[in-house]
Image 1 (cartoon, rainbow over the protein chains, first blue to last red):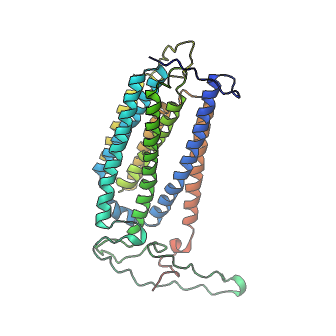
Image 2: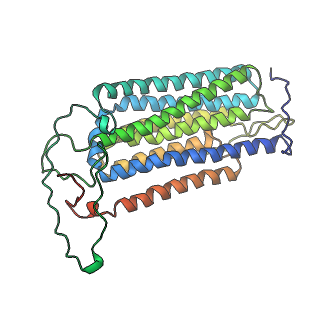
Image 3: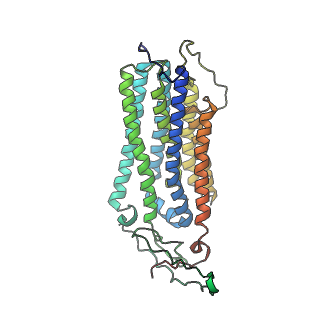
Length: 261
Length: 119
């Protein structure tokens, strides 16, 4: 069953084990850069949420936590089938490997399907990012009139020469918290910020899911050809590491976006 | 999840690396699903600012399980864990120092201070 192809060790490696370990190290370094890439978005999330907590508390209600939880479960199951697939590859069980890779891909497609349903709803309701946000929410309560604090008297050269920040393009949040009269009803200001963060984070994650599907499909083709066996399972192993990272990021995205309180 | 993992008898002529037993993988899978249910359930209870902490704690436990068993970091060489920990460290530095900075501006410190606000 396991194929008899011999996988030569590249000339710059001493043996198969060193080659395998080098591949793993390279993959983990790549995963580290992926974590840093998403780290930028988590940072943006943290800054916006700490500056505008009322926006996050208000806007997360437009997300359906049951769909989010469903997708979490789907990804966890796909991670499980992937881990089993790596095992099957290591043990040289070819048919099992192909089947498990297929199951992983099916679950990944299922994830994207649910995501598509969610995106479509947001699109229809105009719950979009930045200036494209055109949802018909109740009118925002009027902000309290701005009362600028008295500017401390300038003493000679001490006064800052830096002009106040320019207002950015439409769709950006205003700096600072919008102070709203006590007991005012209605949505907070700058709800669109939440959806900018939501679409950016889930969108980049979704791109990773699509890349994962392509990778796993490629692995499935190679597995069907019988390229993997006990002596050579590294590509499946590395694709699995990538897939688990995609799961890992969703594990954090789900509570941060769907389960805000 | 702390039961000793029995390493499978790998065929001696081929080194395939460590093969994680199915039982361990299945238990991790079950734990991840249970923790997902727990995190959804806890989010329904209002615990104030504790909600975010608990959600992050559960997510971290889930992530740890995925990394240790699904990504078999537990059985791999420590250098891979060093690479992973370095990435986490730098994300933590990035987020925490940016948060320190963002809270240091006048519009966050002085109520109603917003010179750049359009009238």
